[in-house]
Length: 167
Image (cartoon, rainbow, N blue to C red):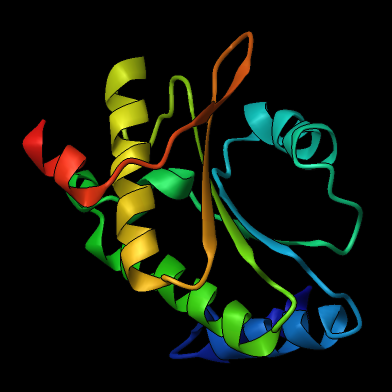
């Protein structure tokens, strides 16, 4: 674990390049099919695993996880999370470049997210906006959207850009 951090300016700093290099070496043998962008909220981690195994029918090694506060919602322009959007977009691009086996990007948003603080309808709309943005950036990938509520998991349709703009 400490190998991922380095001593700089008298404090511990996160070495993103070293983390990505280590992560890619570890998963190089895997053939992920799907990138899963989900929230880091510990209350929902079990549900995200259920989403992968039961809803998406993916096995171990078939998912390239990207975990960030706010999950797939940070990719929406209206979420006002430019730095996070750029970071996640870069990670998606790196994964697609490294693994030609990836065909699908799954964006997940969940109820009562402490990062974006939206109601259920706003969260779903923001997730759909994020899906349109992601489709625009990565047109050769299938984009799937999931809203995780307290009692269910709902797959949302990916709207057309015109549909988002008109609402």
